[in-house]
Image (cartoon, rainbow, N blue to C red):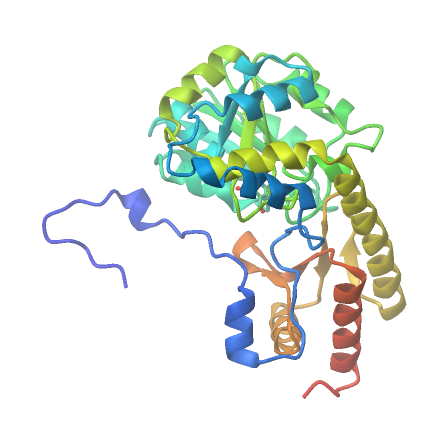
Length: 373
Ligand SMILES: Cc1ncc(COP(=O)(O)O)c(C=O)c1O
């Protein structure tokens, strides 16, 4: 319950803040429902795990964990800069891209500012900007669940300081093309920062019309990437921003000094080197999506084709969606109903291993023939 403190004034925007509600953990589902198998398909993690080289790197750094980490993550920053073909001064690394979103809000926004984003997208941006008390202008997605860049450009006002685009978007999996992005940028004033959140970059980059925003030369674009998804390091917390050196230099001033941790930094370096694991992940996600589409087509389930590692399923009503999500949970399949994203008749399913996708399909079939109870 929210209690107004007798003496301390809590800002209205903090009182009104709804913190992020993560998907259920395996332990919570185990305790509540005791299913025979649990498939955690609610949080867009990598169901293959992570590169085996990560464990080795963490073991090797154990003798240094009594020391504070390198606050500038120099080695990791160098490795990322080399891979992306940019200068190290263009990169700042934090404890996940959520933390980097916090840095963006702390560095560039004040209470009187406005930001623009979509109504159905990753909630981290909304939360981190609300913490600064800014006004948010949420533009509806198009009918086919894509960022409506024309409407977003129309929504820019003199007070707009930042625009957020997740590309591909979470939870829809849709993406903005290079031409769409360039047309949009031609309408964005130079004093407005455009944040391109590319958490699912590794799953979309092969599309010929997907924009490589890191190398497009815009002076007001900051790109975010993460080790939480394709690299399978969500539990370690590493994400970063790439952008013009002057903007990044100012973000450094507000970064929590010692994030990410020693183990996170060495793990990310090891993960970055393991292309084979990355390819294995991409193959699993690609074939898992095709399998899911075939299953949905066969059983009349609506879905939005995705370029991320998850797919949004669309049901007829909130009630039906809530019941389905709960019945799946009881069978050990953790899915994400998208109520918090403003789409209560949507469910997001993370693409898992063959075993997990079989668990999903068999549980769906048990529900449809009534044998799940
Ligand atoms: C678009 C998007 N950005 C950022 C994040 C957060 O990633 P991280 O684990 O790096 O904080 C997510 C996680 O779901 C996401 O979907």
